[in-house]
Image (cartoon, rainbow, N blue to C red):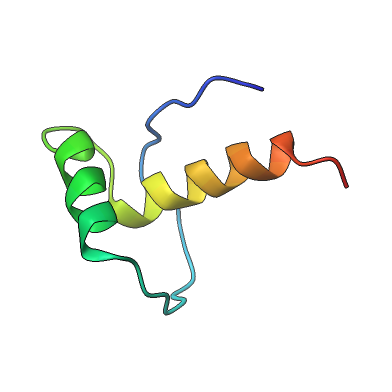
Length: 55
């Protein structure tokens, strides 16, 4: 599995998704003070997960 790194904010398309409040709080704490949006963080996390899945 490749290491996770906090990305810069890329261009995105809006997609509505619900997250548990504790996950939102954890992500916001991790990205605080960094040049990263919540969305960019989630997109990178999904990309890492997709790379790790055997399709």
